[in-house]
Image 1 (cartoon, each protein chain N blue to C red):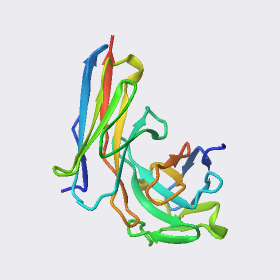
Image 2 (cartoon, rainbow over the protein chains, first blue to last red):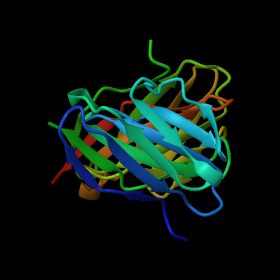
Image 3 (cartoon, helix red, strand yellow):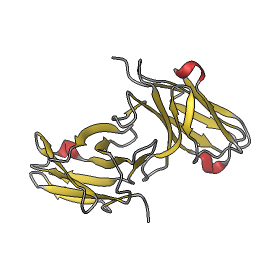
Length: 113
Length: 109
């Protein structure tokens, strides 16, 4: 079984520039999550999808962050414009059902300079 | 108060030691619980689920105490390779999945 695939692995951008992250979940997993993780902290949920519906985006800073999951499979997370404080690891995860374990991708390490 | 809180780390233990971590949660309606392991600069990986009756996987034992709203992870006969950050995860029902901040474990020779 192929795991969750994320790209890119690393991204360095200047502040005020846009950036996008891509995630392909495990085949058949209807639930997809985007998390943000800062050094020394646990992952913090940004948005959760059930199929193509965003069921929890309460922690997503909607003034600069957006996400989409067209056709209920792949997902893209975008930041525009990026700020210095957005430097973190962005993790995508998927699960087979609502309360099932999450499977994570390798993450994208974003550095904003 | 955070919805999920873990023991502050780091824990520094010698090889062969037994170490235990606790994790408390605030939502009494929480439905499922997990322990994840995260190595430095890697993604979290599922270590084990936590069942009401308690469960064991080799040297690892997980327990759930619903009355006191905490879960625990016990590691026996610690190995150098157990050095990592251990994250507890709580599904609170509905669509909320919350991670603790993690507890760092260092096992030394």
